[in-house]
Image 1 (cartoon, rainbow, N blue to C red):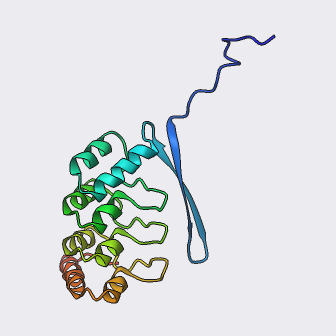
Image 2 (cartoon, helix red, strand yellow):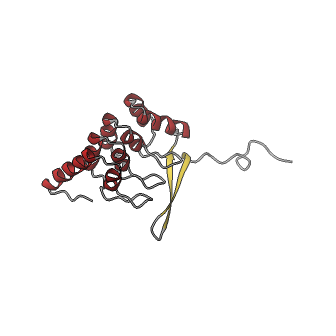
Image 3 (cartoon, helix red, strand yellow):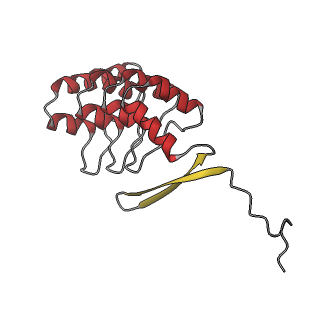
Length: 179
């Protein structure tokens, strides 16, 4: 006869987190598999809402969701972060907020594109400058072996090249190494 209510039959307590995010990245010669703990209370729906808020320039929602525990570096199934979304769409206010609060400026998606790749591809000059001044790598290679500068040249966006050069020169004047 099965006893009910004793500790032996009780279900195990829930873990201190509710979800795991796993990413597999195949790089030059080595595979990297990373599992991140997502804070309790964070759901795939709240991550999706966070990324959508960044994509559509809703700073109030971005701040509210971040305050509720959504990680600034949360990724969707394609590896895109809020900084990717805001950078791709030229939303300087959200880009500034994310950078100021510690978002990874060199986060890469499944195609190894960084927020700087996307800002360059879409011609968002002010976002390009902000990302570079915050430490974004101008030499990061995506899965097509192209840097943000390569993508800019391929699109013929010479004004973006000027912005990259201006930001890099500004960093070099302060003695900051540019990658």
